Length: 235
Image 1: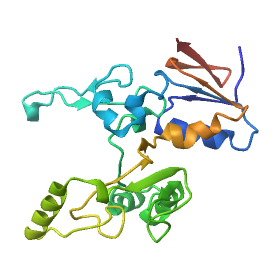
Image 2 (image 1 turned 90 degrees about the horizontal axis):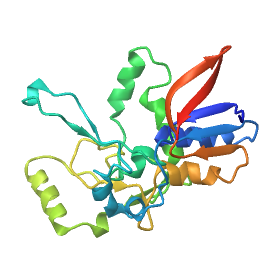
Image 3 (image 1 turned 180 degrees about the horizontal axis):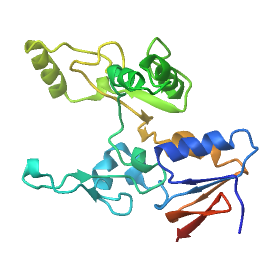
Image 4 (image 1 turned 90 degrees about the vertical axis):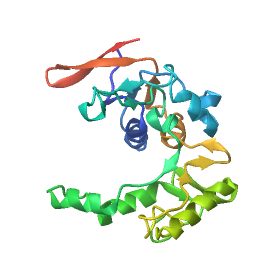
């Protein structure tokens, strides 16, 4: 059996980034396991395809929550990606960060490094924003962020204008200074193609000799032998 310095379970948003980072220096051998398959399907690459992958068992775990007594015991549907790129390969590509106050609350609760001022540089680092670098955005990163305001339906402007009539202010950027407002989303799309964690982080790393990716490899548990983790997978 081959040996690796690191075994990553799941090629989702976190797994793809981790595989890229751990193999960058060339010192470590890394195995990345993914229960799903390839993300090369047109339904994943073409943005409108998320309407199909939203309920497609090939690409989606299609989880359901437990019955909620406050909703007449209905079950909420929780789509989660089962494919290279994970949920970043099947989501609606909306690019929006958490609220700054949430990060500051985490820091205040005793989590060093999680204040908004501390995480913002990492958000900027991942971006290749169409507007370029500024106080809130970065340029040259792996994730392209697009402005689609010139391509949306005129009804969008009607909606935002109506919000203004209700004293809800307009924002150009939910990821900027005005995040409690009405406006248009930015999308993780480049030249009409989805930008996922797989395309942004994993694809460049696949050229490295020290990274191996196994798809359709469902990890069921982690075994420890003499203090070292080994793996068992169902293929």
